Length: 476
Image 1 (cartoon, helix red, strand yellow):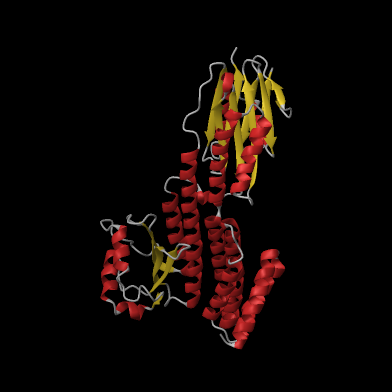
Image 2 (image 1 turned 45 degrees about the vertical axis):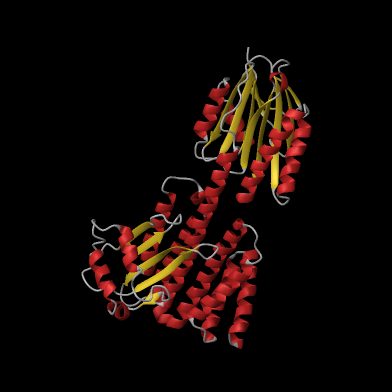
């Protein structure tokens, strides 16, 4: 690294640090000016990309949580795109920049929108075909952003599994032959010379490889493929997850700017895949730790609903206690992540261990909270525990940072802040997690009086969200 590049690197890192603290227009203006300065310092676009990569690595080194790393990566994308836009504008000259400014702004807007979508937590949900839909979106947007004839994106979710493959082609192209399996295209494309080491191949370089002719026939191309641009999808530990390959550049060969855009898109897509894999791990842990079946009580009517895709950080349980009493617990551990999922499992294990040993709800809450704190000191947690005694028609309640339960009695719904709540004839106690107190109260008001009916109304209104609701009342 030259002295001039080193000085530019230091300015870039300081400006990016300022943007992370206050991501407003003044900080983005600094990115714009750095892009202009790079041209004056004689830096190439690859030099600029290398400086950005160094600044991103330095920023990520200080992040310990996936959520923080995602925010840094998203900010880095916006900051880099602003610098890159200014760099290209100055380098190509004022007149050419005016003609292409609208195109670049559209590319930037599309890439920002796609990056935001891939960083959204909704992709981590266990939705059917979520990865397939994401991969198809990446393929379509990559092809449009770089103005390529067609795109071939592949992703290996599990070792040894047939990869997921998405193909996107322009309106001008005929697309792949219907009798060709997409994974065959991936295998053939991987045989093109230079695939392992070279991201960009010109039309002339590609024409010299006989494999490209066979690939052109399979995708229905009417002539030779006009160049190829590729980027790998990689896991955090360096494992290759798949690739994004673009073929046929409109109006010439693929450029360094095209390569920088595709690399950023590949990094963002890789992060989305990793987040999905972590969420799946958390979901499996949650399935293994949440109760598969709940005890029955002769003197109590009890209904439990786990609504939507319950976040792994929400936990609940119902424990059979002495004299026919029920110990009902709900809790949340935050923020999101595998650590929170594991801590939620520890909370439920601690509940099962200590609940049968004491009749004091406060002791149970203290023991469970201590178990979570000892397991993950940096995590926040909340909990509600109620001992429901049908013989005395009462519930003794203890809370730690959790919203109070709701009491439905004589058609009125009130928040039960007291430590001792009377459950007179027909009164129903409702505990919940993952639902805002005001929203829960409004839903319970329209749920009737039966515990199962109350849970059903809440579930129908909150089907898309993750939450738990437990309703209990004494039998007549």
